[in-house]
Image (cartoon, rainbow, N blue to C red):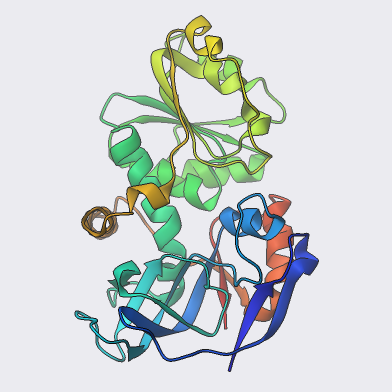
Length: 323
């Protein structure tokens, strides 16, 4: 038996139940790992509330880091005791779990367990957004919403290292300082300013090549007004609520724009892509383009409070649960 957080029905933070669950031996193709740290992300809230469906009961959590405890039949490339990290199927909020070996990577000794747990989902999200969905290069001007958040800070860092002009929106002056420290050239307090007008002023009317939006409802459709003709609107999250259906003619009216709603899980569906993206992420960390800050850590048993703070958007940086 192991301790875990389970959700038996969709709801608020009270739906997170801290209880004992059984853990079987790993099946063929699986590895059993002991968690040392578990990443917390907005997708966990979407799962808990039912916005993203799951079969009940389920254990939330898509990323973590720890040590190999046992290896299922047919698994190659991993040994008992090795340090690993992953992004994968549900089941992260637990002391230990079984997971497909295809979801695991070897965690370098230079990266702590809590950094590894907070690195995978956010780091690979930054990788595909900046290197695949839109390949950011020197001279591009980009807008990053929620620049002080866990993913936002990584986007600011990496985009600046790639040579882009980085504009970030934030919810407070304090968060503005965090985004600037992460690499943003300019910050906009979107609750106090018309951010589209501010972007126009900052860019002297030239606007942005791409907008990265993990906020959703609160920043749409004004995000489209930040784009130059043929620019790309990338919606990768909905922290303030989902964007409802919109008239496609808006894209024509605002300059023949493009819009996309990508998912990390599509980008890493093939193992070779997962490995290539992870290697690119690790190289960026080694070069110093990305600095993975230790996340704020809390006991696994306090998952309700962590969810409440994340849902209220009162956190900055990454969060992790420690079994």
